[in-house]
Length: 261
Image (cartoon, rainbow, N blue to C red; front, side, top):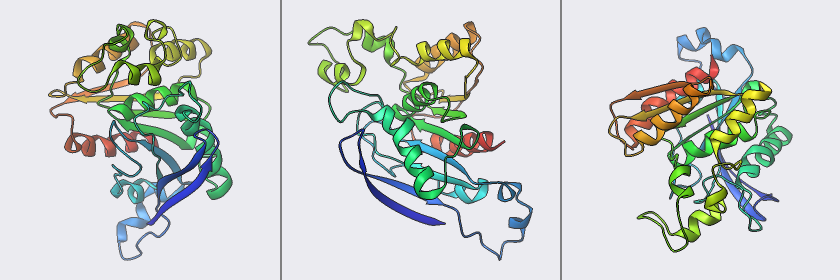
């Protein structure tokens, strides 16, 4: 596999940015089962990996699945933005992942050429980001994988000036999500985006999962129920596990296998 660290100038973020990428372009010839791998007989697919709060580019990369499923893994940096477009200049993180980075990959590497071959997945804050980005840019991403997603829009919507929680203060949430009282009806809310896409018939495939010992379990169950009640097609799984790499490592392979089917 080829491992890249790439820096380019981002108009969305108004600065040079770096992302990590793995391309499985050198399959081993000494492994007899490589010849029987059906994934090697089709064009390479591309999976964007979105990190969680306090993460960075390359902070989680399930590299063992790249060669197995013939996928390029792209890991950008989203800071602590919740992968949303902020009002301030240089904070268009959703547009960065949903438009600018796929365009750069197409022009530079010939990857991410269509929604049928381009997917997005993430964990925790990145799980929220994967849902939002995939639903906001359905023509770019054909499938979404969301693990232990930080689905906190309903909590943020109730916040008042001066409030916050143990993670961050009001100013942070206001910068990420906009005015809290307007959040639930806005396009920063994945529920709102999903309902609009259902009407247009453009819904990407959705795979959600969460550990039964995860502190975000009820948040994920709530979105699962919302999708069921509103006829939003999706797959939802729970199994033993916490908010940790053991759970995410297990489901990373399951999700990428599902994406490549």
